[in-house]
Length: 273
Ligand SMILES: Nc1ncnc2c1ncn2[C@@H]1O[C@H](COP(=O)(O)OP(=O)(O)OP(=O)(O)O)[C@@H](O)[C@H]1O
Ligand SMILES: [Mg+2]
Image (cartoon, rainbow, N blue to C red; front, side, top):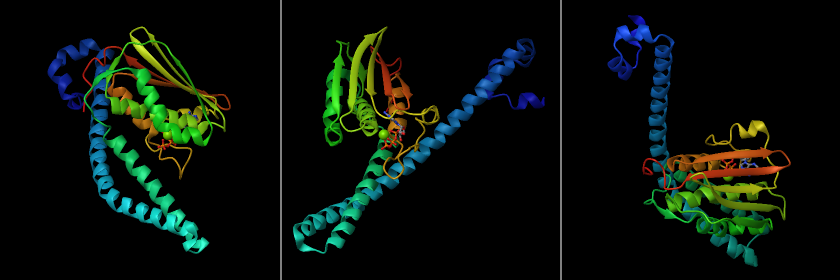
């Protein structure tokens, strides 16, 4: 039968042809669902292949890039002391900034394609958040951001320290980039129904519904030339690996609140990779 030729193998093996008629719409729905899952699996396979390719290219790019930025840095320092033409100083500054931007792209691509593994361990999220703030200090200082902490005692969660620190660095960086000078970022931590909830809220520019609908897509950015658009895609990937969820509430001009909810006791299945 033509229709049955397209039946996914796993369903064909489980449900005999006679039974299919009896199931009626439930059978049609099951076939559609399994086909969808199969196409997702195929897509994931392709993405994993692309990820490996990207990681390889990025790795090869990195050494020449370090040379470009280091030499540019050294000439910039020398010419900045008056040893060169001011026009050359401007050019070398441009080379240095372009090099640093490509370096950021390569770093972000690597983080997305190969999120830091690290053995899962028991993590105290308050300390982890403080560490992320410390790493973001230069960006926060640049805009005189005020960081408010509202940490309730919470049970530890299971996860990769480096990957989860990366999640909060990305969220705090986004918040900082949305803020006007002197704006505030509020970090909150509390436990609720077997989960630990971390919120990163800012009173920055907020987002339209249109922007929100694309947030987690790789390479989606409203800051072309400055952002790569991998920050939130990486967050989503890491969060899902931890059996956790991420939710965003935002309104233009009102600010943004991102909530990450991690299961106490870790994900149902061990954190892969
Ligand atoms: N807290 C926030 N406030 C306002 N807009 C935000 C916020 N967080 C994310 N966005 C919007 O979502 C987009 C995607 O964010 P994402 O972190 O993925 O990429 P990016 O910050 O543009 O670049 P990258 O993080 O790779 O440097 C941003 O360009 C911005 O428009
Ligand atoms: Mg970002």
